[in-house]
Length: 181
Image (cartoon, rainbow, N blue to C red; front, side, top):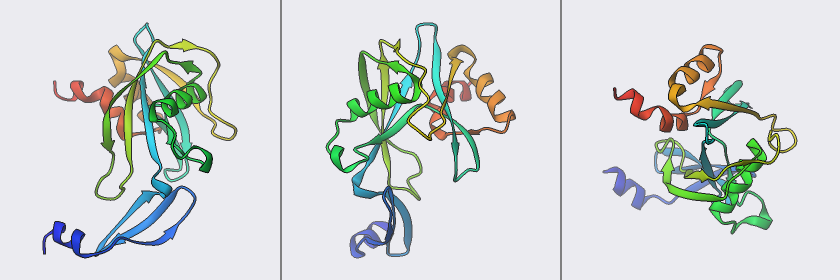
């Protein structure tokens, strides 16, 4: 039986669901999805000085801080289930980094670990940045804002990795061309 046949022939079951994630099965496959069809917005933001705005946040599943592109959930509470993705991206950028964008450009939808997680994210490019606050996220997030020079992004990421920081897979959007040379 092919995977497509197994997909069609077996209903999706949800043995457990929490506020934000759900454990699911379909046939012999086990995977995780976001509860209530929540999606994520990831933001690529760069200053006029060509510094990429990154965030550092302690991630419990990793047991250590992780260097990431700013990101957040779209429609993560019951009152905002129909939230526009670009508005969520703008909100998250400002909350986490203290930067406000004049425009968000959607670059596409992506899946970070499709063999295990059904969650997707929309990647946005922020344009027209203005610093309006220190950032740091909402209460309890403990986000640290980083300004990483695009011209030495590989060196910056390597230095953070050497310090023991985890590196989120979405950082590959910045490293990609350098990996091919």
